[in-house]
Image (cartoon, rainbow, N blue to C red; front, side, top):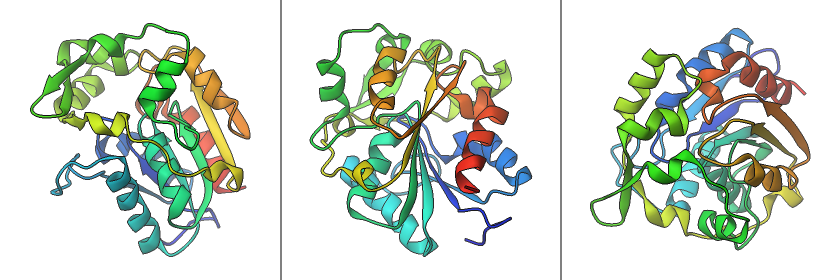
Length: 240
């Protein structure tokens, strides 16, 4: 990927139930700041024609994107995407920086579920929004999606996002991370104070695992609700 203004390319990895589509507004803002970005559809999500996968298949797909770039890149993961970029960076690719946008910054051996169950309980709207779907997957109740993900987003943006949500394999929440990439790769965590999917107390535990921490007064989707602030954080990483 050609870079602009000597910036490092940015690879954006979406969270559960989402797709590369969720980054569109943020990518436009990054374009205007001269930062080249590429949004990835994890297998079975968005425009992907591949079957749904587990954490390891998702991470391998992210790694294949890094290999195609052929240059060090910043990995930005949102929510579940934090687990995917951690696993990808543990074994594959040339990663310049790991950025967790209200995401799961897990340690070796941890899964999303094992992390959550190891922490004091904290109620979030997302807990009431997850609905079983098919065999081993889940979807989001559209009536609960705004409260869970898009509380700060313009209504039209939230409506369009809800229509694009897709099933998520539950195994992705129980697969454990098999490496510790943050021991050798610089990392940044972006806390979102009013997130109703990952409680701020749980974010704080994971933020303490990263080198640098930023805070947004945001819902779970700052890539759509606080685009300018999110783009500025990423730009600073890409041009450091």
